[in-house]
Amino acid sequence: MEPEASRGPEAPNLAQMAASKLSQMGDRSKRLGSAMQEPARQRRIILVIVCVVLLLDNMLYMVIVPIVPDYLEGLQKSAERAQVSPPPAGNDTRRREPAGANFDLQIGVLFASKAIVQLLVNPLSGTFIDRVGYDIPLVIGLSIMFLSTLVFALAENYATLLVARGMQGIGSAFADTSGIALIADRYPEEAERSRSLGIALAFISFGSLAAPPFGGILYQFAGKRVPFLILAAVCLADGALCLAVLKPFADRERANMPVGTPIWRLMTDPYIAVVAGALTICNIPLAFLEPTIAKWMEDTMHSSQWQMGMTWFPAFFPHVLGVFLTVKLAAKYPHLQWFYGAVGMVLIGASSCTVPACKNFGELMVPLCGICFGIAFVDTALLPTLAFLVDVRHVSVYGSVYAIADISYCVAYATGPVVAGKIVHDLGFAQLNLGMGLANVLYAPALLLLKNVARMRPSYSERNMLLEDGAAGLYDAVKMEQKQKKRKGLCESLDGDGVETFVGRSFSQEESSGGEGA
Image 1 (cartoon, rainbow, N blue to C red):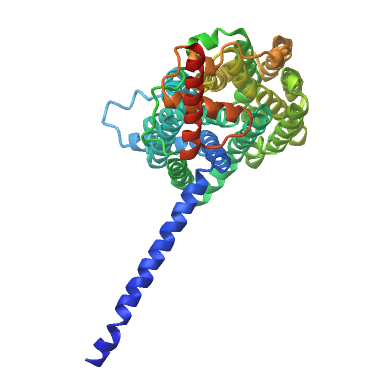
Image 2: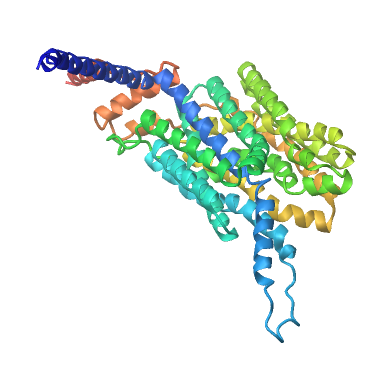
């Protein structure tokens, strides 16, 4: 009985300690939650979330480069072995042609299918983002990307790989567009917006260039599923962080959100059309060289497998350098964004024309680095310009305009794997590069049309839209004050006292104006 008596007083103490620990953990989680909701910190976390989304999407896009050809070849050989069973008598006179004739076509279609599906879904996703905001489409896109990554990991035949690729295109149309639009919305100041979009572009570049070595090494030593399962785990973690920070399904008033300009009207805006054309043409060399340069290197340079696998990786560093330089120049001379884009297109054109003249792997690195350096200039200068054009010429809702930017990229990457091989076969690799280089150089002067964009001023602001029918209540008043503070760089959430003070000031102003009218 003594041990029980001795344990008696300790049991309440243990319960109290456990309750105290739980209370402390609850307080810490509340403090963490409130810290994550601070506007400045939340913007940084949102930037991290979007950068991870773009990294994942581009890694998943390029990780199959070293995996799929070998994997499909293995599937093809196993199918041929299954067919080469002792044939019945009298049926051995007809033999099928080897499936290798369609092998390149299968790979090209698999690579292009993601961009084709994304191209078709983007007009719908852009409109949807404008209607419901940026957070819900971002979660939808992450969820579809997560499922597509799992399907890639579990796929056992070509049809399943094609389905997974199409799913990735749908997820990208929602996640990429809403992510870039979210950055443009949360960073209204031009210098901060350029810097943040530049960081996002650096993650796009890193994902595209690091994925082939990442996928090739893991595929060789750990099997096909491992690289996709790792990407799926990162996608799941990013989705959980997105739910915790953005709280997309919380009850919030959406009825009074400003209505964005329809995507068809944005497409007919001449300034936006010029930017979209530049984004398409500057990415054509990259999109057309990715599926053709490895075979050309093998035929002309007798390059090894590791050289073909590492073709684009050195170009990551000049791409990041180009992003850094453009952000710095845009902060100092923001009115010259069009000029940075034009310089980038001339660089891309000159570099593309010199690719066929290269005789070894070392020489080839120079024009490829020049292409990526130029693309960094064009993208980093023109993506913030799209948001600025929407601010000054339309309504500050960015879903549809960045859907147009995504469509511009998809046009290049959807046609590249299918058209580039045909051009090389019919005309030659040198003619392909000369044509792409000439297109970039000839398009560069069109960016002169953007020369006076920096001098534009808003003609029909969001504030006017909210007030055109008179104030509709507390939401409109708070929304306008938040928008004003955001544009002045003083973005801070209104607490309860602030709302009461603001509403009291509004009512007092209305009473005074009513008294004067009387």
